[in-house]
Amino acid sequence: MRPRFVHLLRAEWTKLRTVRGWTIAMLAAGLVTVALGLLIASGDRASCGDGASEEACPAAPVGPGGEAVQDRFYFVHQPLTGDGTITVRLTSLTGIITYPPPGHDEIVDDVVPWAKAGIMIKDGAEPGSAYAAVMMTGDHGARMQHDFTHDTAGLPGGASNTSPRWLRLTRSGDTLTGEESADGVRWTGIGTIRLKGLPDEVQVGLFVASPCDLTVNSSLGGSSEECRFTQATAVFDRVDVQGSTPLGTWSGIEVADDDGQTDWEKDHRPNGLVRSGDTFTVSGAGDIAPLGDSGAAPIERTLTGTFAGLIIVIVVAAMFVTTEYRRGLIRYTLLASPRRGRALAAKAAVIGVVTFVVGLAATAVTLPLGTRILRANGINILPVSQLTELRVVVGTAALLAVAAVSALALGILFRRSIAAVTVGVAVVVLPYFLAVGAVLPESAAAWLMRVTPAAGFAIQQSIPAYPQVIGHYAPSTGYYPLAPWLGFAVLCGYAAVVLGLAALRLRRSDA
Image (cartoon, rainbow, N blue to C red; front, top):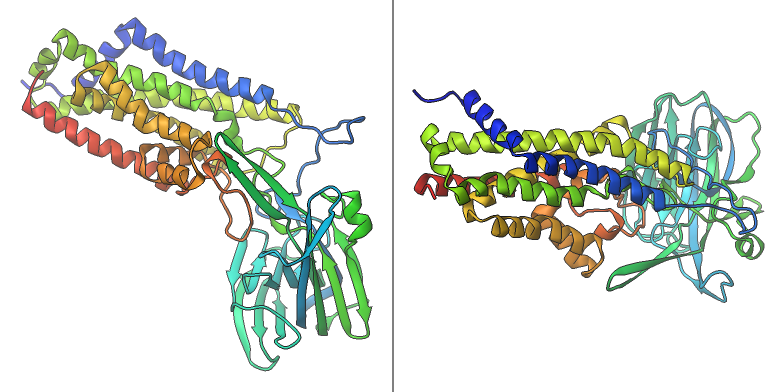
């Protein structure tokens, strides 16, 4: 009588738990993941100050969606009660880039691609408050952005005296509509969005921001980043506000004015407003965007020890089947289950579930303890949603489990522990090391993390790369070329192929 599948599962579970070395190794995989993650977290420290008085770095403002944000710009504003419209004409957008800090001996006239100048409706002037804005950018045309993470493209081009651009932003309740025009007569819509919970009184006005100019110098074994101070200057006229404006006068304020600004910048390139009649010349620096990993750490930094646990898991999973081949016990396993695919499925299920449970316990302990240690060491943690945190924890455990199943299949294909372990480490762990260790050029590193099973590590990325934010988006800085679940799907695809090949070989021969 053919054994039921549950009996096969029980038999494979008995094999795994009765070999003391395998049990100890699986526990060691979890302990190593925890210990190495906490050890690395303990060594990370950060502080702010002038050297004589070090203190904890201030936390970044938090946007309406709960993400850490940059919210530094110059804002010329007045209150608007209820519905209304602001319309302006932008006739110039220029800027400067300084080289190098701190003396800024050379100043170049140029505008960085994501410099922003336009009109905004914002829930107060506090950093992180909700907003919607219509703007012209240095090199990305007209845009409508809101609440830091959302960006909608308008028409390309720039603004100048000979080719000005008109911008309009209209509020109707919670609905805001952005439009642009080349002549102030024929208008083209950019986008319509809703800002839930927007209060009756908001701030409306003109703004200018200019993010730093990022330069990345890559070399064998690492890279260095330099973010130089920039400033943008925009000239507005034909400023018209329709609606209830109780004060009716304009005020200028630098939002988050002390955030990242040096004394040289404050003294030599102050941001502000110069008004001549109906013409507003506004200068500003900074950015209105998600923070990324600048000045803070993502939660997955605590899971650096995953690679060490992964190596142990690959060894145990491969030996789980190669030991039967070495001792000739595989024949008895197959005699007990003539349907060899069921035998393979039982082995894969047992090693996969055991690895998942061990990985889940390890990551569920490491992440909260590691983030607590980082915070105690003065390092701010980038906030994420509970769903994202759950995905990182469960996804890391699933990454270990799928890698274990792949190693089991490699053991059936090669039937030798050394060969199976070597190939398993070479296709999963080695590409990860080469990519995140900056051993290869960034293009090659991104390619590896796209086409090899190491793509599965993308499941750990908690902060996305935003196209409207200039950043060093590379595997060495924790950004992978594939989305989290897509990268994990690549790993699962490889596992499915290897399992299929293992099943084919298992049907053809016993040993």
